[in-house]
Image 1 (cartoon, helix red, strand yellow):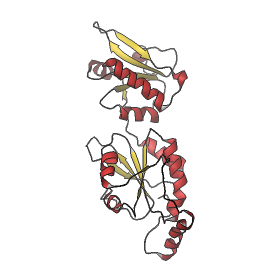
Image 2 (tube, helix red, strand yellow):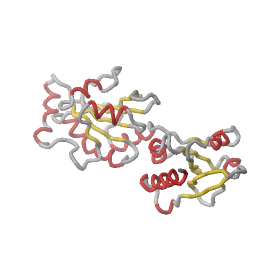
Image 3 (spheres, rainbow, N blue to C red):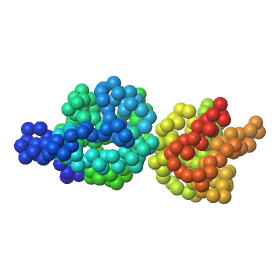
Image 4 (cartoon, one colour):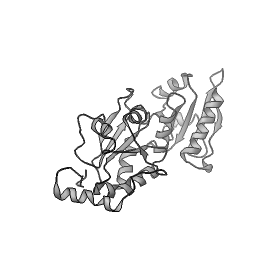
Length: 264
């Protein structure tokens, strides 16, 4: 992993380094109060990780491993920085041998610890795509890698190719439109699109697409609007989110929940 070490059993010099953490860490990793989800058994792993619409990232570790001890504060930073956006978890390979042995990535067995694996929703229930992280073990690098692998269910809408009209014609769920000058979907909206998948659809209109942008023409960007059409096909915006109140996941999620409730 990025040229950095892993603890492996049966190797004297490495094992010595792996054991030093036991002297200075009497308590377990990721205790109560941590933002890291401690996976306790296979049942929890299947229910939370394999069946999720969110990206999960799991560290497989052993408490007696020095390299794992070094990663712990960085892993806590990752969990804090990505709270609500990515599900950050950990599996103690000594206490949860069944989870560590299966880990649902037969093509890439765990060779040592710590090992970091991403479980990315694939659209097939219970069968996420698994990616092993091989980069630098620093929070900044890990966060960047994770946000680039988050599922994005935000639909870019264009009048020119008909995607806008098709999206608006589907009235099976409530919908909101993000009007923005940013081409890439933010991590926050990626996470929201996963949380509300199947319940509420999020579309995106870019300022550079003037034909579609002019349908809305907000004075300030970004703008987030709940949309409906009246009986004559006229576009109506029932509510708009006030970005001056903040851009946190929780505040935006509350707005989407209100939109969902209003639609019902």
